[in-house]
Amino acid sequence: DQQVKQNSPSLSVQEGRISILNCDYTNSMFDYFLWYKKYPAEGPTFLISISSIKDKNEDGRFTVFLNKSAKHLSLHIVPSQPGDSAVYFCAASVGGGSNYKLTFGKGTLLTVNP
Amino acid sequence: NAGVTQTPKFRVLKTGQSMTLLCAQDMNHEYMYWYRQDPGMGLRLIHYSVGEGTTAKGEVPDGYNVSRLKKQNFLLGLESAAPSQTSVYFCASSHFGPQHFGDGTRLSIL
Image (cartoon, rainbow over all chains, first blue to last red; front, side):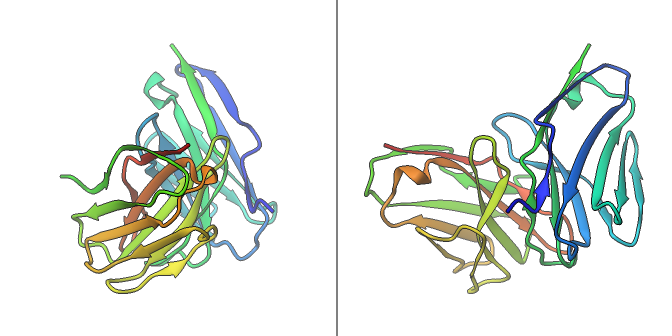
């Protein structure tokens, strides 16, 4: 019973173009969503988050969109850079306060080609 | 500027052996977590702690024990290692914000 789904195992884009990574969830109790980026042999690094009271959050080249009715969120990276090549994990939690247990998707490997 | 440090980085065990993975954080975070990541899978929560002296079960706790005797340290123990516990283990900590992860311990059980 996978509560957070990233249906695309991999994505390849050209440098300078937009990368769109998608994530779906099934648990309607989730109210806080995060994206993590992971390079090989390193731990995940926090990228951006969004609360369920918002439908968009932006941080530089990264924007996360949340569609609660569709239980869907997406991460947009514009413009994509070769250094963005990594595995991206979507994660969700109930109660995004100081203590929360994260449920992760399986990840999407993004490759940005020069 | 260490953040979350995991020891050891690699380890090979034989079935039935025991070992302890150490996680140390220097950010004075209250909350600490242990995850495992298997090929093609996301991270799954094993155990977590909401403060010194407290622990709680996560999604996949069987076969593991934990202890949080000091605020900065969170130990993960395998009493009798099994091949199914071959994985990459990540520790994380947090305090009113996103979780910060260590670089992982790659554990192989033969």
